[in-house]
Image 1 (cartoon, rainbow, N blue to C red):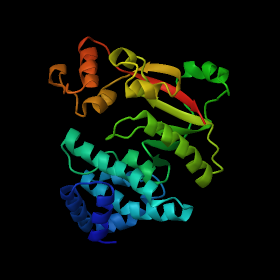
Image 2: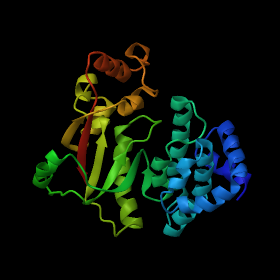
Image 3: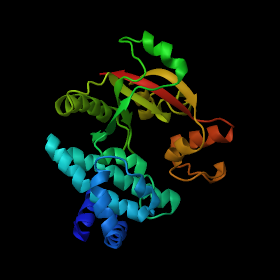
Image 4: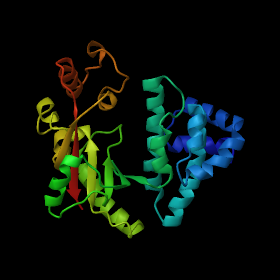
Length: 279
């Protein structure tokens, strides 16, 4: 593996040329480290990466995509799914620079799921191997659903990557494609349902946006089983694409941002909804 391989991987992930060049430089400086740990990163989470600066983490992750790609091919998974899945590395590299002012990859724990084939992007949505979880108060509601569900069941945890419109038709196509993908490539997994834990399902959104909005239409694709008040800034950060600021300084260039800013200014908060969609 050499500098050219890192630049090729960076291009596949949608990383800008300047950051890609810096990652390639970091790979050359830390070649021994990257060559040792990149293959491991394609198999399991490697805590050693967290001790390295973000640009070295990015270099090692880009090197690891080569080994992940080999596993995709062994399973017969197409290059289109591989490229779509790894594009999230580019998104989080951008977030690192825009939100934190740091060049590289801060959120290695998240993209480790992509590298280890625990998460795949299929169309508009991402699907992750996971076990069913939710607030304890929702257990009785789970048991009453048809079919009934129990904590710890195999599920496909749904995530919505940044960067594209949340088009309902595209989301429905993703659900349909995911059913075939997992049945074909992971027939022994036998997920019980699709599941999501996200601010996108927060009932407060019904007061912020019209019922016909893409966010509310997406939320209605799931059966809501529990709601929690959002704590901290993480979910609001996704809306405003910035670190925490005074309300007056938040960008308000969309109807969602204006409504969310007003909610926060009035002392309110976002909510996280837990939802299930049957396979």
